Image (tube, rainbow, N blue to C red):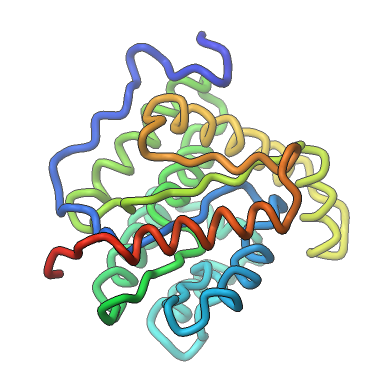
Length: 239
């Protein structure tokens, strides 16, 4: 099997033709505890009215459709929305990703800053669906999920992948949830980290990596703001 930072030769990204990317759309990706939501909030403050924020799906308002679906998936108390029906969960989360793109309203000169996009569904659900499979097989499953999503919702024109030392990510995650991570939670996060790196290696033109082992929070925020400014300045196709 190839090392974690190299894509499997038989599993290269083969995204099926779908809607063209919405240019004024920047998505933040990364494993739990990497600081994604924290950095997005600071970037949003600096961008002001130029930015349309889309919060992570589990943070959606409970009265709206996405929030109702997430509440149902949370009924078992699992933080990763694992109800024991992973194929159903995958389709529901994919549908919510399509819904958020359809419902987004972007004025001229504005840019969407999305906290988790299609790659989150592909990576996390592949990690759940293929928990016991070799990593290259899990990557192939993630690829197929992304292909499905790409038929119904444009993939982001700009994806910023935040990475950090896995131990620091786990420490932040445990601080946020107020307890020690369970073995299954820690294993899922480790697998997700590997799958994100495989996607970044398979399609380097799609990802801009922000490595927090080398960049402090302010440098990361500046890169996020710069990516949003570039996206907002591009000529936009009608949606």
